[in-house]
Structures are given as structure tokens and as C-alpha cells.
Image 1 (tube, helix red, strand yellow):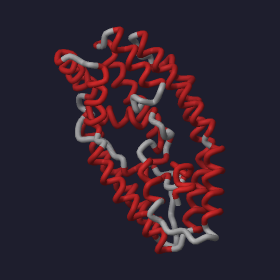
Image 2 (tube, one colour):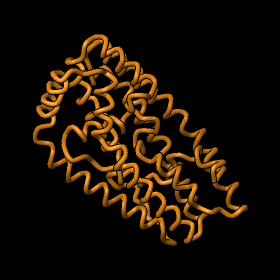
Image 3 (cartoon, one colour):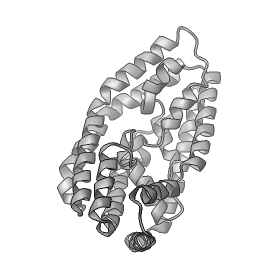
Amino acid sequence: MNSFSKRLGWTLLLGAVALAGCGSNAETEAAVAAQGGFSQEPPEVAHVGFMREALNKVALRPEQRPRVEQLASEASARHQSIKQARQTLRNALADQVQAGKVDRAVLKPQIDALLAAIEQSRAADRAALLRLHDILDKPQRNQFVDAVEAEFQGRRHEHGGHHGMHQWAADLNLTDQQREQIRTALQDKFQGQHEAMKQQGKAMREQGRQVLESFREDQFTLDANAPVFGRDKIEGGIDRMLEFAGAAVPILTPEQRAIAAQKIRTHMGRF
């Protein structure tokens, strides 16, 4: 499956984004939200890169391969508007970071454009996922879901939220004083939200588990109204990312802000 798995990307199991639940504290949640807002993948499925690897574990029959490759080709064309909107928002945020002030209201047009692009693709993405389910037989679906779960667990331990925070700190060459200032600022920003974030993460992981288990079965259930697919969840992740950036940016020097802005523009910062 190497010939097409890299192109298939996030269409293949939209519901599995629920597996990427919230972290254990506000700082981790902010880091995960940041990854979810502006990573290489579209916002609502920022953590499903492991599914591309999982597809390599599925043994397709020759007659199945062209059908799945067609899903990949259609998805690639369909998601161009999302990629463009995400890059536009990333550039606008980078400009604000470099200037030293993050203003969500000013970014609203770019956020709305990104959310609209995602919404426009949603129905076709769901249809593609259902088509993939119909293409695969039950043993193949089990192979795929088993591989998704194994890949997710491996990457969860390897690329946790704190890892991302530490990488940012190293890249920006933060002083000990700056690290403490940012930690305190994040605690103040997210004070009182810890339990709500924790419960939301549990609910999303459970919903993701149910979607994966349903994918194994002959009758695949994908609830279009489930919270994990909702615009509010996507927008909430973006907002938390902006709150995180807004708390940290005033503490940075102009040189550090310039580095951060460049990382955001070129994807290196996982925003």
C-alpha cells in the first residue's frame, strides 16, 4: 500500500481524531490544541498521521487497490481549499506573533474561512470513509483498526504534549526565567479548566474507540451529529491555541518572536 497511503491521509478515518484526547494539565492541553490548530494535517484530524502508517499493514487485493487510490486522489483535490485556508491563517498568526500581540478578533476572517472549508469537505469525507469501509472485507478492517490503535499508542508516548513544549523552549532558547513566566501565565490562563478538559478528553477518546470498533463491523455507524465532528470542537481547539500563544508571546524577545513566527509559517512549529 506504499503507493497510495501517503496520499490518502485524513479522509480514511475521520472519527479517529477523537483518540487524540486532552492532556493531563492545562499546559499539555494547550500544546495539543496548538498541534490541532495548525499542523501539517487539517485541524480536525491533526493527529491521524499514524493512520497512513496503519494502511501499510492492510493487504489489499489487486481489484481493491484502484478503488482506494481513487479515494485518495479525490481527497487530495478536495482538501486543497483547507490547506490554503490553513496556510492563510498560519501566516496571519505568524505576523501577530512577530508583532508581539495575538488578537483573536483580527484573525476571525481567517478562522471562519478555515472552518468553512472544513465544513464544505465534511460530507464528502464522510462518504469516502463509508466507501472505504465497504471496499475492505472484515479481516482487512480488523487489520486496519488494529494497526491504527497500535500506531496511535506508539506515537502518543513518543510525541506527547510536553515534548512539543520542550521543543519550542529549545528552539526559542528560552531562559529559565522565561520558562517560569510562561508556566505561570498558562496556569493563570487555564486555571479552573483542568477538570473540564480532562472529562472532555475522556469523552472524545471513548467516542473515538466506538467509531473504530464500529468500523470493524459489517454495519458501520458514523454519527454526523456527534460532538467530535462538530465545528465547536474544532473552533475550541483553535481558540485554546490562540490563548496559549497570547499568554506566551509577551514574554518573548523580538528575536524569539521572529523565530516563532518563522516556525509557524513553515509548519516547523506544529501550529
